[in-house]
Length: 467
Image (cartoon, rainbow, N blue to C red; front, side, top):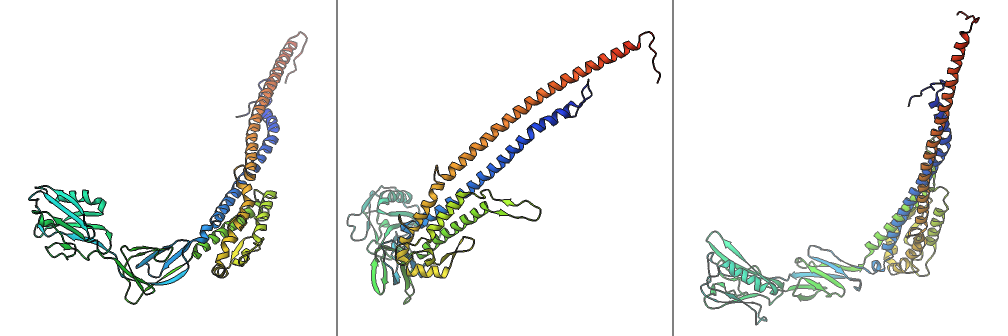
């Protein structure tokens, strides 16, 4: 707003009032700005610290699981032939496994019949899975049923038996064949279709190989898997084998080359444990680096103000890290692995941890059984460290309480700003009223002075001085 001199006095009232208002407002405004900046910086710093602690706690939970150390792996040297998995009850060992034959299911086809075939008479089709299936399932066929209708009836009746039917058409000669597939694998489970009189064209003997137009099995007849473990030959109706080796499940995928068995190795999940340990170290190092950034004063150049962390001199950070470091060097009361250094994990000058991969690998191989008790359980390292930090980041913990306190401060700052704005507005209104009144008074006095001067100049005997 442009300054307008007082009409009566000629004084620049706007400038005077503005200066007086600013003199009243500036100190408090600057104080609130400094407090708001400091509070916001500290609130953000506490949030960053809490995030790093939460990530660290998550990494510890992964390593504090006894299941991690109980987990077993089953590794195949030829994953295209055999895949495997192991339960925690599996014992470590190495096995030579050869696959001579995969288990297959039955797939049969009727003889070639005209594509426009219709059932010539009422009757039944009885479908069996091997000689042991003496009863089978009967499907009612009505005179005039087309191949599509017969297929649909077969599928409806046989779905619970694990047998499905479809039609394959031959465009070269206009013939079609019903093809039936069994879900279950294993020798002696060949599909047999017996037909009543008049429906003989739909009969199939699953033990006879199909010809160019004759009925029978397609590919191979139903057969069991044949495999050997360490030279001991065995058979299985399925390609999924469970507890042939106790606690181990493996799937046969393809035959192995003759006299070239694959190696199946069962052992502890060392790779999974190694990964979890490295995640823990990475999360701890991130916590240390984050804490360092939040508590350091960094010089950025001559003549420039330093960069000050949001928690410089904060006792909370020192107490927290001191407690965690004490637990990391506190030895466990057991044989084998007692401290992190036994795993090749040592502390560097900046407080972060460093892993000697070779020493870690050796320690895991030689002392795997002691790792679980070192890391897990109520007295394990992860539980002890977790107790040190949980009070800081849990709901209602130290950091949350401090952040709530800062939020209260920021709310109070906003209220003080509103109060200051109202007070300054009231001051400005009062000053303008006072100065305007003074200006009007001065204007009246000046007008009175001018009138007196004119009156006196008009009196007889008064001689006006010429300029």
